[in-house]
Amino acid sequence: MTVRAFTLADATLERSPGQDADVFVGNLVDERDGAPVTIGYGRYGPGVSLAETMAVDDVMIVLEGRLTVESDAVALDAGPGAVVHMPKGVAVTIRAGDEGAVTAYVTYPHWRPAHA
Image (cartoon, rainbow, N blue to C red; front, side, top):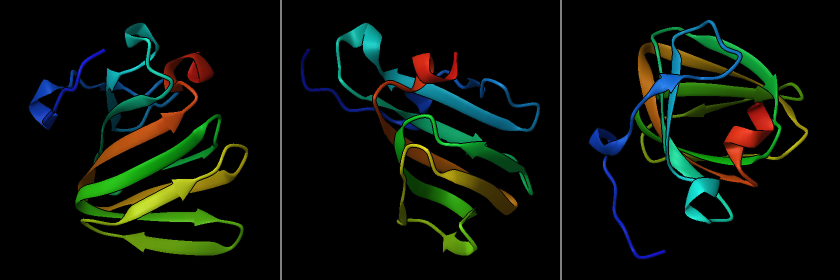
């Protein structure tokens, strides 16, 4: 593996597995590259809400828009530049603001096999 840089234009966004809502993800680095983590971009449509129990440790960086991440009666408001850590096994609800949101993410271990 070599050093690489990515932009959102490099990601092929696909509907997030198990989601009917306007939530799309695009992995850029994952198990197919021999990496120990998954790295990619996500896009949440305006007002979208999704609830899940984290299958992997997930770090999400908000690039555009706003998200609210709720867990254990705590609600975090995250805008551009915010870094949100969601540990494996924690139940979360992620809500996008009226303008939606774009994020970058890093998961450990791999995101795709955990959602298969």
